[in-house]
Amino acid sequence: MRYLPLLLFLFGCSKSNTPKEDHVEPGADSVRVISTKMGRKLWMMKTAKVKERGDTLIGYGVSITFFKGNRAVSILTADSGKYDQTSGNMVAFGRVHLISSDSTELWSRSLHWDEKKKIIWTEDSVKIYDRKRERILYAKGLETDASISYIKFKSPVRGEGEEEFER
Image (cartoon, rainbow, N blue to C red; front, top):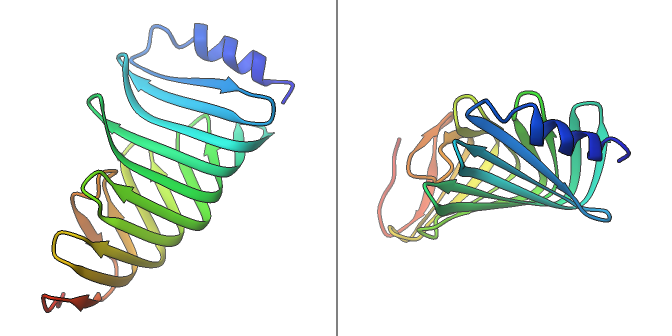
């Protein structure tokens, strides 16, 4: 944690000429990381407890809010996670829950955020509750955007609910 003041200085000063910035705000045991591009929030991560290992922050009690424009499009919570400060990529572990602003919910043991592609992905089993269609979907592996507006499954999908679902 002794490097966080240095990180604040580096994030606050050295990246001011680039369009994308990350800002780390340390607390007593917690941290909040805000990723912006040209003054607009992309995502905000909060952790209840954090450890620093090189360029990686390891957080416990993780909450990540994803934004599109000025509006939150989803919130991810997890037991723990890792944030690579160099690449901007994140991984959430444990009881991972992602809920979109339209109330679509996704559960898994892990979810990855790819900063370059702006996608969430996993190879683990997933459960998705599609509130609009009143169905539950199960699969192994997927790719989606932060608002869960599209889902690309990596395996056959099975489901329960009002509509029959076959992939």
